[in-house]
Image 1 (tube, one colour):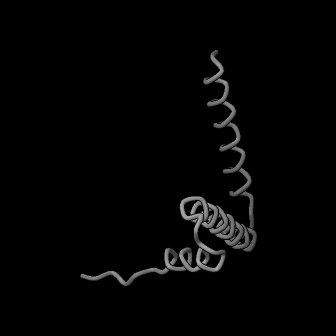
Image 2 (cartoon, one colour):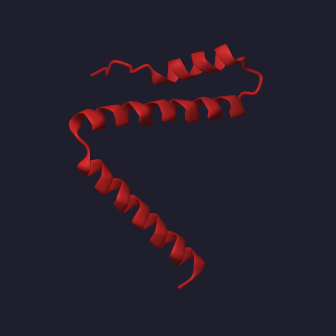
Image 3 (spheres, helix red, strand yellow):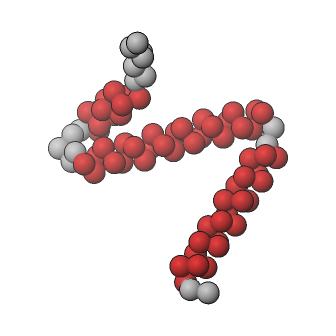
Length: 76
């Protein structure tokens, strides 16, 4: 078994455990976990914005994130 195979196998086991844990959660726990995942995604997105745009101030980077999060109405 190669090192790459070992890593893939470990990643699969971790994913299966995450799925098992998610299935065992109550609806309230799932709701809170969703909010935590959204917060983490926003933090990562903000880090990416800062990395790609080092000239932006913190407030400007947050405004760019807010712009990205706006859901546009679908036009027929």
